[in-house]
Image (cartoon, rainbow over all chains, first blue to last red; front, top):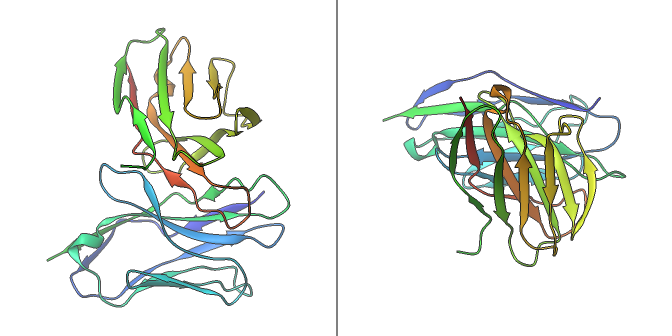
Length: 113
Length: 115
């Protein structure tokens, strides 16, 4: 079945460090790909998305490129802040169905001052 | 605040009791989803509604679970005869339409603890 695999956390970084959170997927069709973020005590919110191969989603300094050849959608940020500490979820939806997203397990990011 | 709201935010109950959660979606959103999230896991789909019609239910949704969206607005999720394994965060999300690119808007969740 369709699935999303994320790197295990927690990822612990110092402020201003470079961030990469890996996400790979398995899908029978051509998915749309998403990154959601969950701050402590809050619900998930969309961070960015990409709907076709080679698209780059970006928001708040984060970016991710839809790589069909490697079935990946890695999240990157050049310089993290303490306020970026959260859990990040990679997700996919498939066309031709009910569009219910499949989520990865989430990767916790902890940024120290 | 026009986001998705959920009530209660926390619920502690004893095994065997019934519980009901409520979700109020963003007002113009047609679709409403329920998920369950356990520690260290991503949200797992339970069921969704298109307006008032319940269109799909996950295998995770046992007979003890029932969901309604009577007028296509708010929704309730009821768990009967709760078990300790039901302890989790229950998330509600809504979306405007039904496309593969659609963004879901999540509520803050209801955390259930079954003793």
